[in-house]
Image (cartoon, rainbow over all chains, first blue to last red; front, side):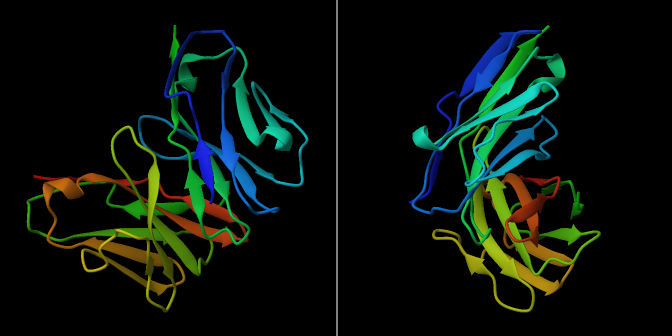
Amino acid sequence: AQKVTQAQTEISVVEKEDVTLDCVYETRDTTYYLFWYKQPPSGELVFLIRRNSFDEQNEISGRYSWNFQKSTSSFNFTITASQVVDSAVYFCALSEPTGNQFYFGTGTSLTVIP
Amino acid sequence: GAVVSQHPSRVICKSGTSVKIECRSLDFQATTMFWYRQFPKQSLMLMATSNEGSKATYEQGVEKDKFLINHASLTLSTLTVTSAHPEDSSFYICSARWTYNEQFFGPGTRLTVL
């Protein structure tokens, strides 16, 4: 069965610190997709990244970086030099091959303190 | 990326009334749309999958007579919460599938039932 675990419920960091949000997933599919979304207080989900199961290359986008490790079924997200605007709830999600079903983790609430 | 809108963004209604929420894909046609529900400080839970021109598929535990879904066109799906009660108060989010394995999420509708 598919499952996404985000063990960190809440994290607080001081501005400019680096922070890593953990995501561990379970799936029996050999083909799957992993996602990260940001949900600010407004509620709207903001897409951050999609990664397919065959692409284990790490990705960097500005202050954001993602570390995909199939061996440990993890897809961790790091924010470098955090800013107050990064404060939000971050969701990791897993999609099955057909794209019909998204499995969301329980989210990590990040607070960046000025 | 593609745009999905929801209307209304916020609704307050009295217990026993019905509320309709619209989900529109603004710049693409979506044969499949999804409805999610999110309680405060919780994750998104898939309620149902809406296919254009056919009946929606509901997840286990979701009352189909309570949450009526209509996907009458390739750009519009509606969710009607019938005879709403305070426990139906939640944040409802729709998404539309654009391509294989790519979904775009709407901004959400916050429903409060008094």
